[in-house]
Amino acid sequence: MLDPRSYRRAPTGTLQPPTGASAPPAAAGAQPAGPYRQPSPPTPGTTPHQRSGGRGRHRVGLTMLGPALVVSVAYMDPGNFATNMTAGSLFGPMLLWVIVLANVVAMFVQYLACKVGIATGKDLPELCRQHTPRPVTYALWIQAELVAMATDLAEFVGGAVALHLLFGLPLLPAALLVAGLSLLLLVLAPEGRHRFQTVTALLLLVLVLGFAYQCVRAGSWHGVLSGLRPELAGSQSLMLATGIVGATVMPHVIYLHSHLGRLPATTSPAEKRRVLRGQRTSLIATLGLAGLVNAGMLTLASATLRPAGGRSGQGEQSLDGFHDGLGIALGPGAALAFALALLASGLASAGVGTFAGQVIMRGFLRRRVPLIVRRLLTMTPPLAVLALGVAPMQALVLSQIVLSFGIPCALAPLAWFTARRSLMGPVANRAVTTGCAVAVCAAISVLNVWLLTRAVLG
Image (tube, rainbow, N blue to C red):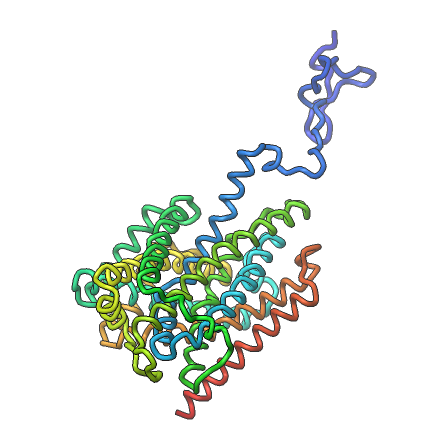
């Protein structure tokens, strides 16, 4: 028997037998223990989720659906209520084609956002910080924070109006109550936990059921095919179309989704492709549902708030007016469903907006602020707007126009990064995909320049 003291230490720090000694015998079918154990290579073409069986695949499917659900909430926020129902009450179903087109563009953009996280293991703000000059990084961060503030404005105004409609509270105290409820949601369902996705899904269910009830009562889907023909009716309809795009292609959620879609850098290309296919399916399902809700808002307003055969401009153009008009046309149940859906939209999108702001600051500046502290800071602008007596409807529509200006600032870096094979590897964009991203960015930029010119020239 060998003396244990005769063993020598290898440079790697493991114990080796003395020269001329053989390794201890191993039992049949078992690997030797200690320094003699050899790692087993994984089975080619399999992943941990696949090796876990059907139950594991089911959990993976739910995990993929969670980020898509969180993202879809932002496409049904109070800003969507304002732009879509204003468009329906003023122009009937004429701008329905804009909602459909914007929803398709949103699916495409969000697919690119999760793709960059899956391929690189980093979110879009982190990539901007690493691959752009410092002045450009700071400029992108500033505009992203302005976009986040515009989102907060829509959420607080919408939630405050909903509480005013439900309980008759004045707008400013109602906004303070919305702030408290949003803080409570962040405490009960913090970032990165399944509880947040569960709470978000429940609020989303309230929103969807509320509009489904109203649309069924109104029969608002009859005669809407005319709205799928692309047309506009003057500068006001073009401004509303731009607002609809801004309310649908949400720039702050581009940053958030790139964060939610991250995978470890060691993930194999085959696994990345598999996850990307699953995320694409989840996005089509959840954003397709969001598109139906947005279309329902417009057709509902067209069917109930615009006089039959009336000229554009005769419909109600405030959230209070929409609520009262639905109550008159469809009864108190429809008015209650509208107010509850508006409240659920404001609360759910408040949490999503706060997490998006955290991703923006952490990625661009490598700074992390506690979620509750950030929520307290971002409450100030919307509360100031309400305290100054700005009309809630005007604030909502303008917030969506600000969001539209932020889209090119998020989409241009996204198109650039996803086209670089050095970053994306085998899942880099094809030339056609990059061309579509550039075309979307250029089209929205042209709309924004038109709006800016119109504002300057009065």
